[in-house]
Amino acid sequence: MSTPDLALPVTDPDLEQRLRSRLALVEKELAGHVVGRAPFITEAAAHLLEAGGKRFRPLLVLLAAECGDRSDSQEVITAACVVELTHLASLYHDDVMDEAALRRGVDTAHARWDNHVAILTGDFLFSRSSELTAELGPEAVRIQAQTFTRLVEGQIMETQAPGPGDDPIAHHLDVVAGKTGILIATSARYGAMFGGASPEVVQALTAYGDIVGAAFQISDDILDIASESAESGKTPGTDLREGVPTLPVLFARRDAAGSTDPADVRLLELLDADLADDALHAECLALLRGHRALDEARAYVVAEAEKAKRLLDALPQGPVREALEKFADIVAVRSR
Image 1 (cartoon, one colour):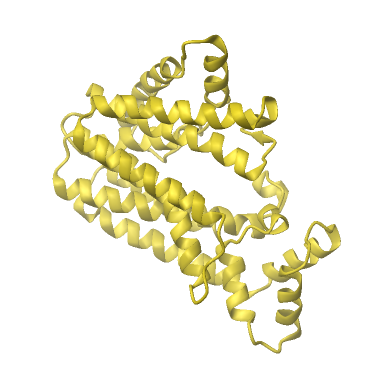
Image 2: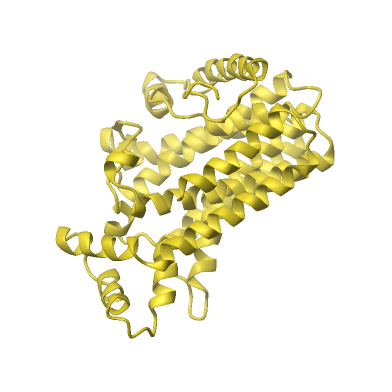
């Protein structure tokens, strides 16, 4: 497996070297794309870029491009910049909505400056990504517009409770598909398209990205409950404390509804309580960790990862397909 700073499990040395070389080009171009007309704009726009990140989405563009005969084209590099700028822009807005203080180990833009600067900087980055998309042609513009619409819809839907008669689980999965899955799907799609892959491969990789991207987010939600902080590096139960609905919690609510089991009754009481209280939060976390809903959520992620892997039958055997299969396996295993 490659060294840890490559966000996909690439085992072929030649492929790894090509990806690293092209990712370095993407990084260099990204630094230029966040430059504004005034120094303060540049400072604010470069803030999260310079804080680092896995660059998973641009790396997926580069990897998917390997399925065609134009993997080293400038269009592929440009597309990789488009998806990362779109992702960065969404983070500025997300941090305002979540009132987050830190992102990637540094102050969020709204914490360092204010909400107005954070929101407008996100808008600036979205605009930059749109300018670059225009260089890729009308089809890319259409895809980017649809991606942006779906992403924003997911963000809006996250702020709203399901309507009367709506399934809370379906609502949550729709939010995850919009907030996370769609941009990963577009990353794989752009890479395959501009790398010169066949229409069949483009379609398969788009669907793969959609499924595996959403599954990765859900596996994160499972880890938020199941992992100790020493294992994950994060404070466990953060979403739970903040009342953010996740798939394990929604499964638990569904399974416990109408149950006479004292543990289920108590769990529902706690899920409706103020979990800012450390004792109540710890009790709720312990009940969730022992609840069948956690295994149900894990089984869902494993099934989605397998579904994503089956889509890769459209790709020829080789290091690209192997890396994508291994990533789907990682998504499945990390939730256990």
